[in-house]
Image (cartoon, rainbow, N blue to C red):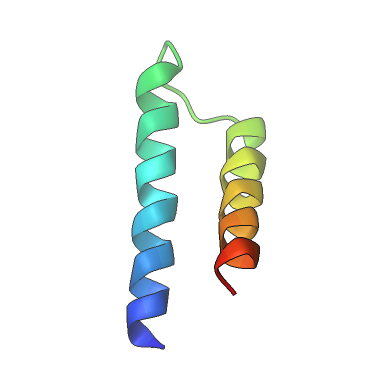
Length: 48
């Protein structure tokens, strides 16, 4: 269980980091947050 939590934690942080770098002037918006968690939910659904 702990490995799974760490995996998703890392996945979320990586997605936020890449969104942060790709959005000038380096902001994370509500849309970015929604997209990250939607992507993580889709990954979790596929892996289960």
